[in-house]
Image 1: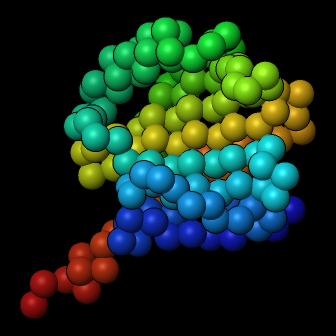
Image 2: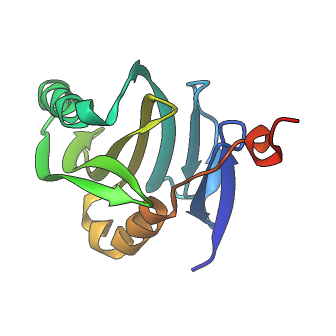
Length: 156
């Protein structure tokens, strides 16, 4: 499977997305989205509104868990943990949800970028989760934070 590299947020971070996924319009100005042609695989990267120092990661992930439990119909958490991706700490939650009569498998990654929330969500039809797990891992592992161009050039 081929992947395409995207640079996001004034080229401050990059992510690798499978090349068969096309960029989708996002209704949130601070978000980037990709979708398969059949709309069965969706990836979204968004900047959250809250400040997020690393020491508050567990607390914020717990808040999201409680909110999902309350707001998402048929929410079933399958897995929740902290993980390291390229030197950064993320909270990861894998869960099942229902929407429009379909059951979806979701991965929710919560981390920090420039002190603010960075939220990466990946969703597919629940019975395709096993087939897409390598895609989920590759996308997660591809997250990179880049030095700003000004920092690379140095101040003279």
